[in-house]
Image (cartoon, rainbow, N blue to C red; front, side, top):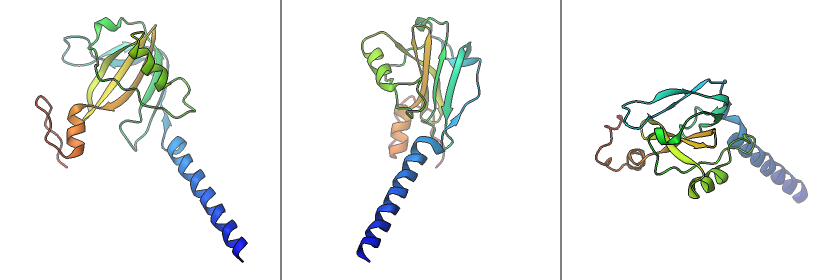
Length: 166
């Protein structure tokens, strides 16, 4: 009887573990349709503008605004866009193999790549960040300082747009 109980508990644990892994890595991501442009914010522009891209691959999830990831090729000079100082590439699921957060982080640190602002406050407190590197582009969404304060329940810093009602 004890062995049967142990086998049952181990089986349920394995089932729960596989289920948790599947839901984290696969279930909530949707592949995005091919796109022929991305929005980037040129220096001095009041709003982002569309720029042509090729070979777009992207994923997103309705469960979180920071699950967006994209890879594409683009003919653009990073110097024409608003720099993004706090770029922190976020990990993508292993099956989305064009996006490697570690490689992007190292390229940003040693100056081989440049982070620019895609869209500020694409959702309140979330910016779309784009890294431009040798004709390639990589995009993700990350929490900005306004979002950090708002999501923590603190007053937002000066210069932030008014937060939405909770």
